[in-house]
Length: 507
Picture 1: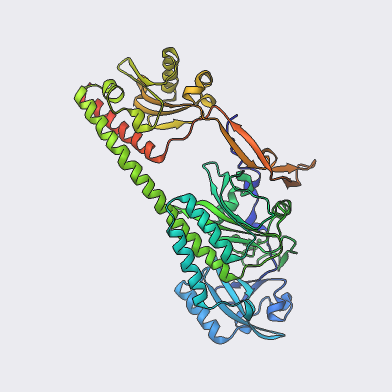
Picture 2: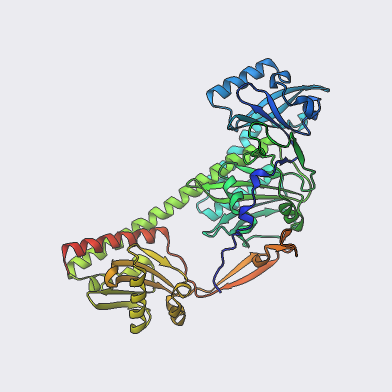
């Protein structure tokens, strides 16, 4: 069985930005940028302003906040410094004036204001307390010397800082399935360490939102969603796009997913590498729990720190590997020039392409001559394989890790050649350098059966997440381990040399 891609097409097409509801741990105002007129509100806004939504729409934001704050908001908007930056607004309602945390999002003609109550005085922490916690966590993470250790340290530090019952570090693979690399949790909770979860658990459009939103929090899965008034945004004549809002409500299937996990609260915070989503911090709590904004800001800062550290460790590992392989590449070129021909220089001397590309076998077809080294398929099988490669007409280096899936005859020698890395020499003539890797039988421990990630009811409209997250083991066969990026780079350099060799006519 080959490892499957469980990124659900159905889940990936649900329009999350058009939910048009918010979670009740905050309130929302939609304000026209041109004149600060309120055009839409969440129906719980009465708690801050003391008026019903119908009486607030079409009034001015300046009617409810101090003039000094209004001027400051205008100045920041003019300078382009408002978008997604936190600030304080003091709303005056029936209970007098009260301070709120506000986060603004600019969207076309509108400014969306997300508003949350500030914590009680007893919950406040001084700047020095927060700074000390942050510096300690930074130092602990930056002291690690491997990606695994960095993830383990980050999970430990973030659990201590946040108070969540469980903090996991979740890394995506090339198919967007996620594996739990590190986990810190309270006793009695089900462990997911080492388990892989299918891509459909965090579908395509949800992953895309993490590029814009650092975190996503659901303080209480049993919340009652809050509607917007009016339902249709008068500036756009459509639902308000809430994709950039932390308060955006959650699809019912995700709340059911949380229930099946026996958690009331969840929070996820992104980990980026090279500007792309590398993984997530995934946090669980068994009771309802709202992490204050300061705690969420710490998560955001530490996610940037661990992302930078992971990137640094990864670059160092790649740099060391590149230097080592480049030395082998140089020796190979010297051997080819010394011998004056490709087969001998690449395959038969002290250094060979097996070392350069970490392969168990290699075959070179050039000038109607077939040279091999290591474990390779039989001569007739190789000739057929080269004919198939010629039919693909590929002039680029490429790898195939499940060869039998693309070229059926390869099933007969999967034990020695499940994976191939192909370097074209003269592809139109069927001339290639091919290196081989054997089958590596892998046991993938999924968090529940990924084939049951989504269960539809008889109407094929209503659907539910899987009930169990117990280990479901998949045996992956006829598949080789992938070549590293540095090895692919070396294959590209070798291809460039082969083209140069042909042009100069040295063979």
